[in-house]
Image (tube, rainbow, N blue to C red; front, side, top):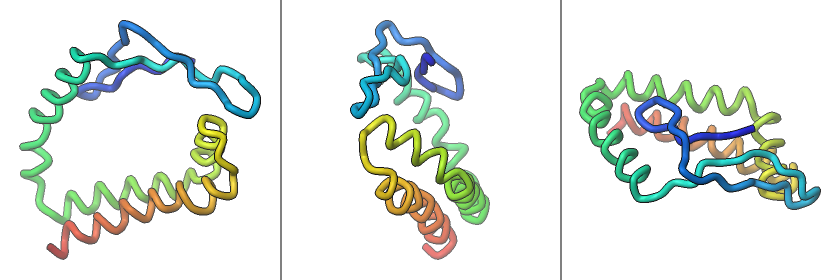
Length: 117
């Protein structure tokens, strides 16, 4: 599998790629684009361009989107946990019971902060 950059909602090929390897099996999981200065500048420019639209959304709409991200992560904990375990070598109990569910919880927490602050 080859994973490109995602900049301004579009896949952008890297000039170079690195292999991500399962530390337990040494299996190559993917080739991932390695970003350089040009890709960083493009990503920052895209983020700056996108920010006014995000900032212009009413807080309840931002909260709704963030809540949805949390729901999608929570719904896919087993798959995301397995991927994270394969990529990092962390035990599945840690990724599946702590790290990935915590990511979902973080989105839910900040969704609530959108409407409380």
